[in-house]
Length: 159
Image (spheres, rainbow, N blue to C red):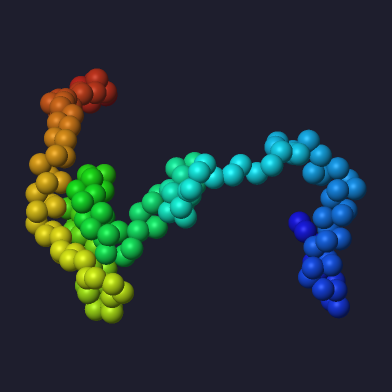
C-alpha cells in the first residue's frame, strides 16, 4: 500500500520524492520500451482515428463512445442477440422494457445537433424471435415403472 501524503507537504513535492525513491531502488530499470521515443501517429491522424486505434488496441467496446442516439440504435439492433442468452420470457421482456425506458428518457432530454430517430422495441416481437431461436428443451428422463413391493419372508414365517 502506498504511504499517505504527509500533512504540510505539497502534492507535487511528495510525488517527486516518491519517484526519486523509486529510481534509487531501480524500480524503473529494464522497463519495456525504456530509452525509446513514444510512437508518433502515422501521418495526419485525427483525434477520431487515434481513439478508434486505441479502442482496437485495448479491446474497448466502442458502443460507449457513440452519441446517445446512435448507441441506442446500435443496441436495438443487438437486442435479439442479447435476448438469446436469457433464460426466460420474463427476463426477455424485462430487457426490452429497460431498453424502452432508456429510449423514452432520451426523447425527454433536449438534444444537441440534429435529432436522430430512435424507435421503441416491441417486446412481443423480441419474445417471439427468442422463442423461435431457442433450442428445444431436452426430453424428460424416462420414468421407471414402479417396482412391486418386496415381500418379507418374516411375515410368512409362523411363530
